[in-house]
Every structure is written in C-alpha cells, then in structure tokens.
Length: 577
View 1 (spheres, one colour):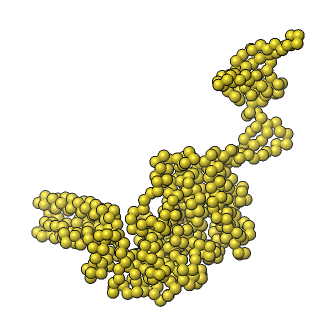
View 2 (cartoon, one colour):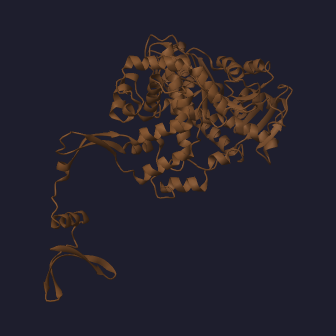
View 3 (spheres, rainbow, N blue to C red):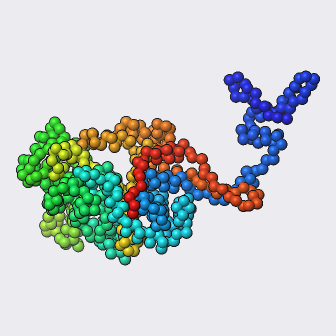
C-alpha cells in the first residue's frame, strides 16, 4: 500500500490510499480509501508508517525541561550593545558591569526592588546571558556603588555624544516620594506625586534638544527648583567643557533672579517664558498690543523692562478657548459651593457658626479651586456675603491663549519661530519624567536607605530611559507614534497646535501598520517579545542525559521588531576607562 496525490484540475488534489499489482505487462491500481479530508500532519505520519518507520509520540521523543522568556532580553541587550552603552559604562567587561547591565535591563522588563530583581532575572535568559545567576543583593548594592563612582565619566561621554557647542540643552526638575526614614536626601517639599505626608527626593534631568537624556543630579527634597540651576550651569561649563550652550528651562526654573545670575556667564544663553504677571505688565505699559494678533499668531516685541532680551509674543486660539472654558467651570464650581455655605449659615438659627468657622469653610473652597482673586466676600452679622470680581475676570480673560517666550540669543543665531519651538521642546523632558515615574521604569517608590544608593538608583533609571528613548525611536513604526513628527518639528508652525500626520491618524484608526501588524504600546511590544522563549530540551531515552537549547520561531511582529533595531546608531568603543 502507498499514498498517492492525484491532481484534480482547478480543485485541490485528491489524497488516495492505494495498492498496486502487476498483471502481465501492466500495473493495476486499486483505491482503498480517500484520505483527502485528513490533516497534513496525519497523512505524513501515515506515509512514514507505510514506509516501515517506527513512530513514537512527541512527548516520548523530546522533553522540554525548562522554558524561559528570551525575546525581550535579546532585543534590549542588542540595543545596549549597538548604542555602545556597555562600553560607556566600562570599556572592558567585568562583574560589576554585567550586574549593572542586568539591573538596567530589569528596569525595562519588570521594574522592582533590587532583591526582587535578583529573583526575577533567573526566570528569564538575562541571568544566564550576563552570567549573574549567582549574584546576591549585597553584590548588587556594591555594583550600585561602583556605578555611582563612574557617573561623572559616563555623563561626560554622553554629553560628548549628544551635546554640541552652541547647541541647546533642556533642563527640568521633578521629584519622587520616599517610603522610609533613613535617607538624608528625603525631606518634605513640593510633592508632585500627590502622596501627602511622605518626604520626597528632588532630581533634575538634562537632555539634548530632542529629549535624549544626558545627565541627572539628585537633591534633597526641600530644594527649590531654581536653586538647582547653578549646579547645571557649572556642569555644562566645567564637566562637559561647553563654553557656549543655550539652556532651555520653564518659567518656574529660570526665574528673574536666576537669569540675572546667568548673565555673569556670557557663553551661557537661555530660553524661557514670562509669567502671567509680567505679561499683564507688558499689556499695561503698551509694549504688548493685542492687535498684533489680528493677522498673525507670533510677533517679536521689545520692552524696556527686559533690557538685552528678545520677547516672542504668541497667541493660540485653541489654548484661549481651553483656558476660558476651564475658568468658567472653576467659577461655577466655586459659586455653587459658596451658595451652599451661605445657605447652610443662614439655616443655623439656634447654634450659629462663628465668623472664624465660616471663614474656614470659605477658605477651603477658594483654595480648592484657586479662584480667590475672582471673588469678593465678607462676613457680617454671622452671614456670608460674596460676589464675583468681574474686573479681575475680564483682566485675566485678556491674556487667554497668550504666552511670551524670552531669550538672550540674538536674532542672527536664533529666529523667533525657532526660539518658540525650542521652548516647546521642554515637552520632551516632561516625557522623560512620565517614563521614569510611570509604568515603564517606575523610579518610585524609593526604598533604598543610603543617599549613595538612591543617587545610583536614579542614575540607573536615567540610563534605562536612554535605552528606551532610542528603542521608541527605532520601533516608532510598530508603536502608537507619529513617525513624521521628528522631521515636522523643525518646520511646523511654532504656535499652532501640532497636527497629527495622515499616516499616524490612519495607523491609530486601523490599529495596524501598513504591513498588517498590530500596533503596540511600548509595554505590550516588550511583552510580546517576551513570548519568544528559549527552551531547554532533552532527547527521551538518551543515555548521556545531554540537553540542548532551542529558541522558538519568531512571529512576524517579533521579527520586524528585531529588524528595526538595525536603525539604531552604531557606536564605536568608548574611550578606555
């Protein structure tokens, strides 16, 4: 007997079980069964059986002893090596460098405590790849100390790679809460995380104009944002050797006092923005005319109140509408609560509230909505009287949608439109903080006890974001990212709201790439890469007990993600350290 495939014109071929015998000079065939409806693997097994081969169940032939996630580890380590980050940390491989790289990869794969990291990397191929399977937490803490001692050298090399003389540097400050009582850096201050009652730790991040991280510095939690600026100016000039650089900071960072201090360094230019009070003064003195925005949304003005500076006044109608709507909502909410308080006070006949009690309730309301400047109120004879301050509301409405960018740079070096674009590039630093503090890297909560370990932890998170920043750029095709955005930023209208490109709009609507692959977030793409496993296998009945490893076949999405890593810049070896 044998199996024969018979062509069937335009239809699928017929799969027939036949036998054959010779009668005289002819071959006589007889069909025993039609196997066309059988699965292909079942037909293949039947063919082997008819050939006299011995068939063994798959589970009796090959045993998979262990399966570990591998694809995400492979992708991140390939990115690290292609970027030359391992060479920046230390030019020669050593135990400390392997531990630092393992911690860095863990921040991207599954951010957790240092002890938990030493457990988790055993469940992936990371520990085996870097040879850190036997590491304990004390050795990890020693590796953090080793990394902290090299921070200045690593940042200097990153600055040499990404910062250029006369180029732009973005700087911003954030903070994270601390759950402990031992670190000297943990102090009470301006908490950006909304965790009341917990001390915080402040840190400032320097990036290039694109938002690529270069350096980080850690401060006690009670340090004001502007107080961190002198350290950054000194770092740019002395540590990085940049005699000429333009520092971009927000209006809360580059205060008037700090700008006056920066004037003492002629090589250090700056770009910032005016506060609303200063804009209102410009309007009152006549330096800023609202008629400037009748035909345009950007106008360069001069003012005697800001000698030696250029001012770029901008008007965004969409922003104006958003501010108007938000103010009306807050005014309505404040008015509703004040009416409630006034009614409650009027009902209290037997036990009326004291003036202090009424004032405390009013204070909580106006503090919650930040509308104290727009309401006049008084307490007379145990009754609450209030009214809207219409003049204050009209004065604020005049500034809706208007902001003013200020810079020390002359027009021949920086045009008005480019100055506004540069100030808006601070959004890239804010994205760094979202990644550092969000689900990607989870810089918080901070459990480490010593300030040295806290500083090393935050620097490690910055290096992890450095890898993520480049991975996001390389994988933009597969992510919910606008691939046209980097090329559009330098040429688009600096004031008008950014418009999503048609390609990005179509990709987000279809949730598929042009190649038909499912669009991912950065987190889900790493999770999908992790499904490519490295299996440890053993042949059943093998006397030697030898094992071998086999990586599962890559899916189309995994293969495309690995191919896109070729877009990363290939960096040569760093200088010897």
